[in-house]
Image: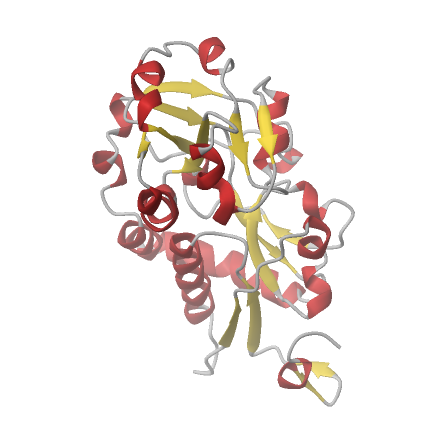
Amino acid sequence: MGLNSATWIIEGVKRMDRVHFWNGNKSASRQAYEVALLKACLRITDVNGQATSVYVDNIDYPDAADEGRVFATDADVLVTVAGNSKFDGINKLVVPSPLTKGLLGFRLLIVRDASLPQFAKLTSQELLQQHSIGIPNTWADAALFRHNHYPVIERGSLDELFHRLKLKEFDYVALGVNEIEDIYNHLAAPLGGLSIEPSLMLYYPFPLVFYVNPNRPDLVKRLQKGLQALQDTNEFSTIFNHYHDNLLEKFSLAGRTLFTLENPQLPQSMVNFHASLLD
């Protein structure tokens, strides 16, 4: 059996009042928000006063195949980008409701300080495409950037990424506006000589959704009901704003030069997805 299976199985039957949430392979800021949103969905759909406990599993899987097999470790639910190719061919249930207003698809750049004047002159996407982007191994957006004719250096882990940027293995890193500050402060700033570029922003449709273990159709129904209830009571906005307060102003998003990319991996159910962050 999988991780902590004795905790989750009683007389061979999976406990419906407990949820194993795999929340690895992402920044701490994303982890905190996604845990809060999941717990809110479960709380608002509790019945008969019986609370649902959540086991948060933050194990990182550097190998894409291991991440794709996470439901085999008894995980009940995870959050990932819609259409994530790591889960192609994996039996799963999808809750097709965007969880972050498309926030992760708005990408800011981290560059070497010496490159800041050069990036300030990149007034077209064609000019940016002359520079290479560094992406950790197995990240879902590597294929997306290649599809859009960006030169991609895909190698190593997030922890190594900024050392390699300083060594000029590539020209920049692009991260979601909901994670860039946390990652920059913990991994890039201590190295010195790196900055969040102040004038450019990329966008591609990159909605985050719940993927659910196929053995938990009950959980799919609860999450769908919970997300709708949070929207109806405005609690979704309260949670979102708490974890993403003042991002538009902090990073001057409305005043940046915006380059839009295509996402060929979007599932058919979300091809018309529209990010609402800047609305």
